[in-house]
Image (cartoon, rainbow over all chains, first blue to last red; front, side, top):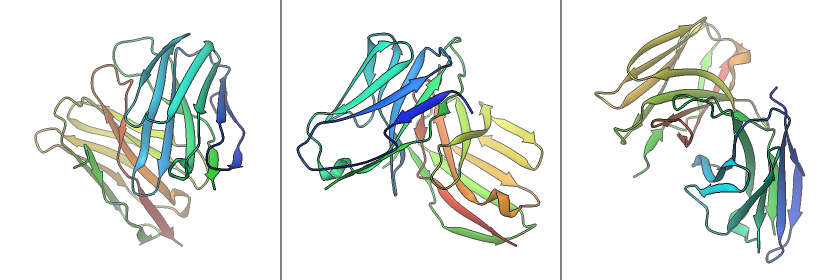
Length: 115
Length: 111
């Protein structure tokens, strides 16, 4: 497995509370991504990063913010969690060395429940 | 309408059968086409990728891309119970940095 860890692996929280999920990689890959996975929707991109302090929005970025202060860490923050953010969150990484295809490797996921 | 459409199934077939999984898409800018396999409560893992149109074979798996019809397929020959998983198609334009996924098809191979 690519060296990707996510923490926590499971979290239950209440509506309105802030939540931060962490993705840590040991591969020194340039790109990091946050996806959410919901029934009927597959995986949807929330935000991604193409370098330290360089981030961009994905398809479903509303209600989420991200930060990347080190190559190895990519944080996803829900400023005020809502029940619609109950989901499984996956982090992914890719080398990004070429302008063509770059395989994305996925972490084990974080299961978040917002009550 | 979603950019990528995939029948979510579930699909259940007997061991040894040939399985066909399909996706359609609407964005003609897509150039890279991938199939990911995801076991229950695990992250997706890349199974195959294809650039542009054509076929690609890897063991029991064959990926086909028909850009003129905006249609991609994954065939699994001699299916095994260990192939039971959710299969997700994904695609992207140049750079392949922003993937668009299908909904995933849950497949069960019955012994």
